[in-house]
Length: 214
Image 1 (spheres, rainbow, N blue to C red):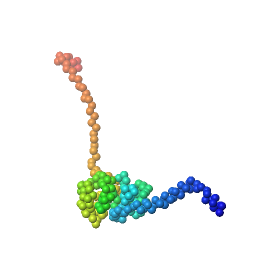
Image 2 (image 1 turned 30 degrees about the horizontal axis):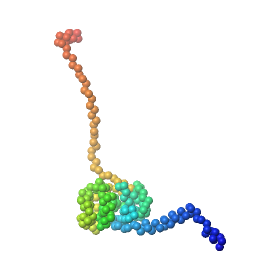
Image 3 (image 1 turned 30 degrees about the vertical axis):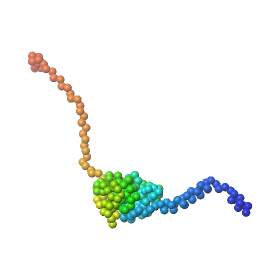
Image 4 (image 1 turned 180 degrees about the horizontal axis):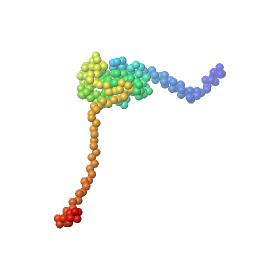
């Protein structure tokens, strides 16, 4: 009994206390993190979209990997909350994500607001045809839900005339531009003209010079 009392009376080392605290925080944070992930919709091709309320962001899951849109490009991770890494060159992006984040063709208002703020400027640059057809309806979610969402109903993976602008390997952005003939620019250097001095001689003197030359 005395030994047990002495052991209980000893103080716990600081490093052990901090280790136990970290383990407890990790154990309680994992279920909360998993609980704060909400399923949003299915894009197609086995890609699902999830909403993270704690980060106010969307991620896409396919074949055990998560993809996040950041800095006009894709990042990948093996968990909802990262760590997020840039895509290696040998990693294949799911075909549904080759066009950037899918348009908000699903009746889910948080995705519409997020897409309009984060992705719409990128679509305006890299999908000008799609932007010309639909950007008028982005003013309000009610208008978008009435005019655009019915066009994509029952065909969520429908892209129309959108062309992929991301490389199949690595997911890096490839800017598509029309290649015209090379422009040749000539550099013109203007030099001052030489001054020609004309000396007029008297007729009699010219005769004398002519006789001397003979």
